[in-house]
Amino acid sequence: MQKSKAELSILPELATKKLSLESTLQELSLYDFQIEASCQGKEVAQRFEVNKLLPGVILTTENKFVGMISRGRFLEQMSRPYGLELFLKRSLKSLYEFAATNFLKLPGDTLIVTAAKLSLQRPPELLNEPIVVELANGVYRLIDVHQLLVAQSQIHELTTQLLDEQTQAQMLQAEKMATLGRMVAEIAHEIKNPVNCINGNSAFMSTYCQDLMQLVAAYEAEPNISAKIVDLKEEIELDFLLEDLPKLIESMKVSAERLTKIVSGLQNFSHLDENKRQTVDLHECIESTLLILNNPLKNGIEVIKNYGDLPLVSCYSGQLSQVFMNIISNAIDALGEAKSKENAHPNFLPAKDWHPQIQITTEVLETKDSEWVVIKISDNGPGIKPEIQKRIFETFFTTKPVGKGTGLGLAISNQIVTQKHGGKLFVRSPRWNAANSPSPSRLYAANSVSSHSVGEDVSKVAAKIATLEHLNSAMGMEDSQPSFGTEFEILLPLV
Image 1 (cartoon, rainbow, N blue to C red):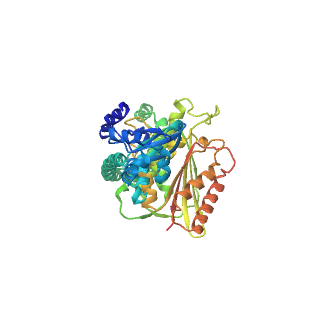
Image 2 (tube, rainbow, N blue to C red; image 1 turned 30 degrees about the horizontal axis):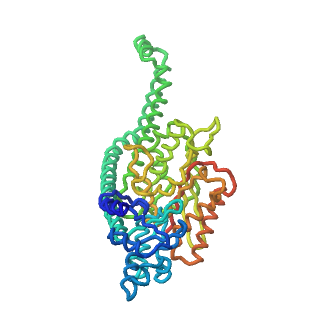
Image 3 (spheres, one colour; image 1 turned 135 degrees about the horizontal axis):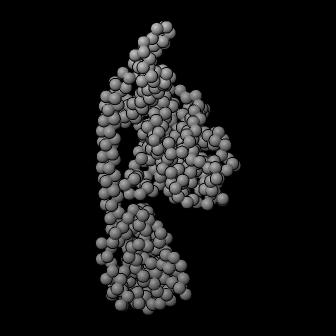
């Protein structure tokens, strides 16, 4: 009796209990009413009378689970003609065998959302039946359906709130990026005019200086040179000036050309809000991105480029530049952490001559029915843990410290590749594959096909598997040791 009163007192806590999207059944307040099947029915009737909220009773035999009788089924049988005489003084086992029905039994680590879905999928006559929850060590508890649906409604409200926050954050980010793109485009345009002036006139200045130097040489060839001119030559160090001036002009010309490339890169990157596809050279987009990231790449990071022969691609060039920027920036951060911290995983044991590298590879993949442009960006850092790989494209998910990462970069990149361009974006980190896990290539193929083959016929799935196997064989990853820590692979259809 005291136990029942205690249970009754803790039930209101559900209204204030904080739940999350990952909350499970074992986090809820569960009913603990177990009784031996050999006991008489009147004992259960007394407990139901004392605690009006008990949804049912768990039957055991020598502390082993036998079954469950709900309050509704119990009272239904008691209300039948001769029900009291038949079952009150007999063992509960006889009542259970007579009135047994199917019941739902779920593990304690089942998500509340999943449990609510399974509960509502039951036949109409079983919708109000309580659910048996199996906890660790063979412990069983009961949860009332009403209590489960209240918890599910709280999670639904939380989900709606999070979606609203994510939508608002994405809108702010999109507006911020669009504003930034317009501002960068305007600044780049303003800088480009004087830069073009300097770059265009550098050739003329070089020619004029050559002419003046020839004139000076002609004067020096004259036999009679006044003492004043000789003194002036010594004062201005004419010999050094004639030697250094061409070098100075050449360095100014190189700097002007580099500044022109930087401005062009900023203009390409600023096309974030473009509404129409443009036919562009993806190698130029990549080079523009590397030019903008030149400063962090100076910290001892080697960039290896394995460019294939790519055709012009119809795409949103500014948005793809943003994808390249996000992926390469993450690689730079990972390599920087690998240089400054101890190894995060025993699989990452770099040699003494190890130095950070980023490798960019492009190629065209031809299949039976389509053609794809493939861009692979890999680094030789420590890689990404499997549990992080599963969530890496989730909005707001980040492993970076507060203030450094927003959790939007890769999520937006995934949307740009998959939704805007109809492509695919994969991440692989073979350093973290366990010894008994599938090889990197097979793991890559399995993950890729399973996420895109719902509702497709067998031939299409087989074609995708063949495509992925071709990719993996081209990478040489079947049985070799991984030469990189993390690789992002972008597949864009040629249309």
